[in-house]
Image (cartoon, rainbow, N blue to C red):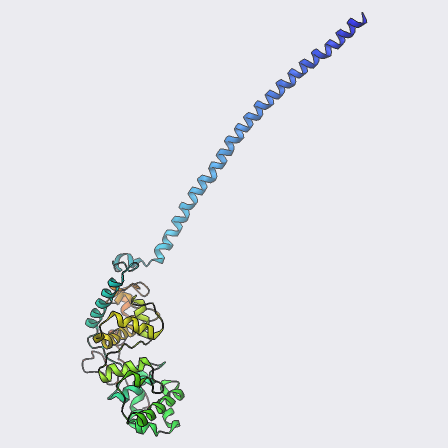
Length: 344
């Protein structure tokens, strides 16, 4: 009887264990299903959540691009889209650039048929001295100063014998008068002692004179001797770079590259036309692009004022109805003579 009882008692826990196991398994299964559902629900939520940033991200660039578009338009001059040159300059070939440069020169010749050196002079000696004095000042100020200078020292011999202090006082209005007086005395003495009081007509000789470089030599050769030369001053260098004719900044390299583009017979007048345009229209700080006659061929169109009426107000000298730089301009000059220096 005890064994049976024991077996019966031991059998009951087994049955109970089996039942408990089944319940535990069922609970685990239910938990798994619940977890699966939650996971599925969570996954769906995650997917929705993940999708949301994508939507936001896709919308954000649209907003950015909408915001940037006006800035891009503003950066690209509005008038350029309608009135700017239609020719492309970015991938311009050498041949195309040369043709464009020569076309611009022809157009400048039509605009400035009266282009000339804007220094007053009656002979090669006066032109040489005036050009030396024009460094870091305006031609107008030089022209207002030289009448008294040449009245006192009309020849190289006279100037070579000048009193330095008196010479300095006469040229004081041009600035840097001590250094310039030294150059004038030096070149006058050299002309007297080495060239019989005559200005030489060769570049090799001119550049040996004190204060005379290639620019000054080319001015004298081109305008006093009829020898073609390219004058690379501040205006010329600025414009030929804006025109895309060269990227050089060194004056001698600029001169060499421009000389390869144009025939030698054009060199002197090309210099005058470009300088005229730089002083009247294509200013350093604010070019009058809206009033420029060669804008259609200029890669830099749009750097300055585009409105035609506003651009016209930027024009200078005869183009703006103002006096020119010479007190004694050529007969064909369409503008007004410059006034003399006050008190002289």
